[in-house]
Amino acid sequence: MSTEKTYGKLIGASLGPGDPGLITRHAWDALHSGARWLYPVKKAAEMSYALSIAERAGIALPQDRVELVFPMTREADILAKAWMRAAEQTVALLAEGRDLVFLVEGDASTFATFGHLARVVRELVPEVCVETIAGVSSFAAAAAAAEVTLAEEDETFAIIPAAYGVAVIDHLLDEFDTLALLKVKPLVDEVIDLLARRDLLASSVFVEKVGAPDERIVRDVASLQGQTVNYLSLMLVQNPKRVRGELRRGCRKRQEGAANAEGAP
Image 1: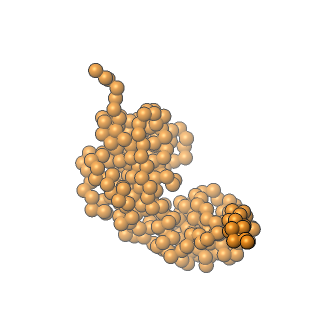
Image 2: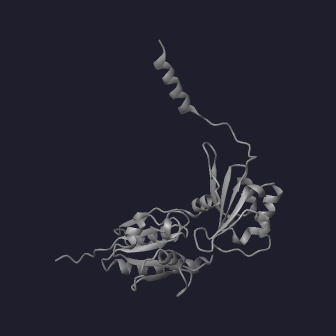
């Protein structure tokens, strides 16, 4: 008789940034698959934004759902212990043989908790099967809500946490046509000052809690100076004055050359 454990599958279900209508069919099916729900919180018994998205979708919240605590801190020791505790709790639940679906706000592959959790779980139990369900990212939803085109044809686009600071942002404005500055809350005033110096206020937009009932879009970003904004906020900055380098179109030239050769007498 085999004593080998059969683990459930760990599923990262991306729910989008806030609008329940952006939950994909794939994620919807995972939520209704009978898998046990896991959801992230910053501290025990606190509200989970990811869980609130599912709730606004009209899904009855399962009684056996489990919260995992991921504290908001940069203290390495505290973070390491919290991550390990969450991973060990996840492994213990997977060992019951039932699938787990971890609720993710936005997209599970983009600045999300799920990637790190899945990695630690696999380090503990390599045979655990992990599935990641793609979702709508906050910056894509924000661009749509604000009617901003992130990139057209040969334009360039970068996504960075604003915490890298204004010096990095200033440099990247010369390298990319559009920047998505995520988690901009701590640096709003500094970013506004930079945009004013670069004469880019008119081509910037601030979006807070995109897709949520209290979504806010601010086009006059200078009006945010001195205000406290929500943690779930970002800024889309376009630099129409950027000087672009020459594109290398070798493949296109080869195709054109081949076409001319075929048409040659």
